[in-house]
Length: 164
Image 1 (cartoon, rainbow, N blue to C red):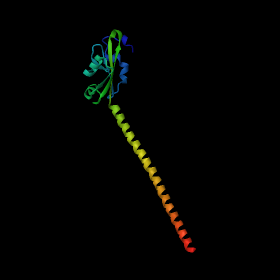
Image 2 (cartoon, one colour; image 1 turned 60 degrees about the vertical axis):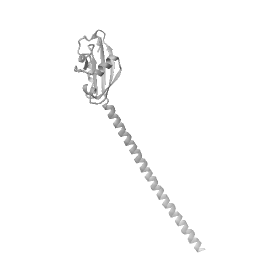
Image 3 (cartoon, rainbow, N blue to C red; image 1 turned 90 degrees about the vertical axis):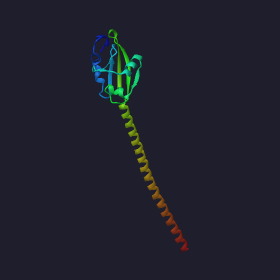
Image 4 (cartoon, one colour; image 1 turned 60 degrees about the horizontal axis):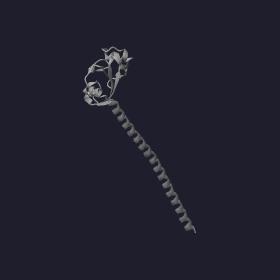
């Protein structure tokens, strides 16, 4: 969609209607800031976020949102990160586009990664224990056979000594 063809008073949902499908409930929110400075989620709802407004005004590219600010946008009450860009829409003015993603997926991914690491270490330890146990068992058998053989040789030499 060409932003230059959008009327100045167009609703953000009209401007970014195609992008609304990018949002994921409780994971990713797309916020627009029309030239009037209001913040709106792409479905048209107005939101208030001093942190995002200030970051947009300062021209920052990213900003970290604390838990309450993320919850205010409809995300889980977890830390969130926002990517911020300005779009020059020609006669329609300069629009701010903000993508806010919850850090919940990152946390979950880290937890799954930790769990995989623990399972991998446990599996490796189990394999070492299993093969080590088999090696010790084999070594014990060889030791017992060696003793048996030494005992038989001793008996044979003692028997030979008494016969002579």
